[in-house]
Image 1 (cartoon, rainbow, N blue to C red):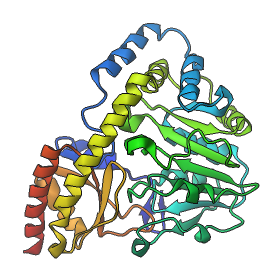
Image 2 (cartoon, helix red, strand yellow; image 1 turned 135 degrees about the vertical axis):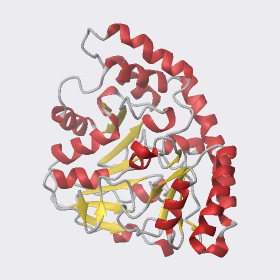
Image 3 (cartoon, rainbow, N blue to C red; image 1 turned 180 degrees about the vertical axis):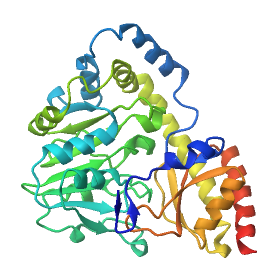
Length: 353
């Protein structure tokens, strides 16, 4: 789907398919070296029950308990992407607004459902920070990511909650919030914000993009509307087993440790990138997610040289509000980042010729 020059259906996995499958992947925001062995074992154990239809009650209760909510406020979905489709199809809205730059599936789902979508474009000169005054007062559906993909900006929870209005649905995509140490600025589990819908994904931190598992947290009546729009048995038994495992105390402790490791690796990446300021490279920041957004001249050519040197990065021009000078880089371990920075140095030298 192309809208005003932006391919809303382009995602990072396109960079590492086919001829990109052998590249070092800095294009996809799924945590490397996942899923861990213990999680693979839990999923494998579920395969003995594949003859039975999926029963999501235990997993749903586990997710509810993880956020201190009643089960009526939880809906399990086949990844956060399904949740965007359900919201677009099930909710009766007149003026949906998507805050960009951000993950493009919410807008694509709304357009596919026949909605006319308005955009609020956050500005580079403001650090891509949320300006609540830019959101139209009559918007009855507002979608924002936190931390936002691809800018890696973590918006204050109070600023986002301040967007709530009577008669408005406020959708907050927290797919990467568990990669933020302490999950500060999270709204998941909050029940006092009217119209709040929080989306979570378990595919990023745990490396389960191929399994498809996420969930929605919202008022019971909203959950009921979304559930009616789902097909029967929308989440597979292996995905349900993964959901239950990923919200257990052991998993939460591991995710918290991983978030601190990501923060350290991100600092190493940003420090290295800042060494290329003389080449016109600028890092959007401060970055708080497991990825970094950078702007540099001739980014398209640099990206092509990086592919030749064995590295895949995410083009930025498919995100509304960005152009061909932007690239998104996933945070990886220090050794991988160091190798990437060396390749970037060579790519920039080739571009200067």
